[in-house]
Amino acid sequence: MKRVDCPADRISSSPEETIALGEEFGKQLPPGSVVALTGTLGAGKTVFTRGIALALGIGEEITSPTYAIIGEYEGRIPLYHMDAYRLAGDDDFRLAGAEEYLYGEGICVIEWPERLTLLPGHAIRVTITIRDDGKRRFHREGNS
Image (cartoon, rainbow, N blue to C red; front, side, top):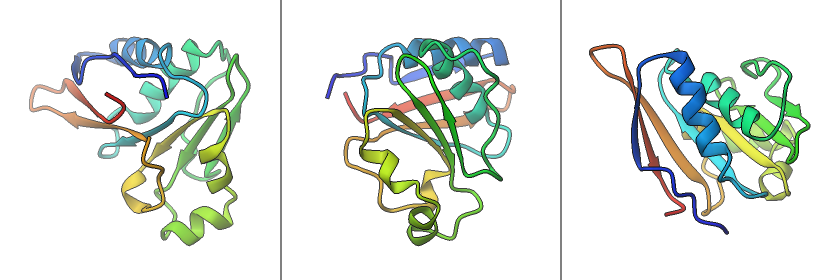
């Protein structure tokens, strides 16, 4: 799989900067990528995903898939935006039909991946931390 060359640590001061970081990151993602986004409520996981969607040429609004579990968007590469927050674990993920997306040609972005153990080894993990000054720190692990 192609290496993602975004720096391992980045800081965002605003939602606009978070979208720009997501877009920079998304431009480097090859088909079949799995991105696991970890962070507290309000950290910016969905905002970051909006940037990834822009990089894929997706013009429609990206919303949190907390209740739908999976949001599907068509772009130059399909985007599958998933949220495991309401799931009890891997069995619920499978029952939602989400596991099949992990091994396709689209890009999977999963919020709350810590609720799952079945993520593929090639998943890129991005942890978003809210600093004391309100800025967001994005730390990437994997695919380096």
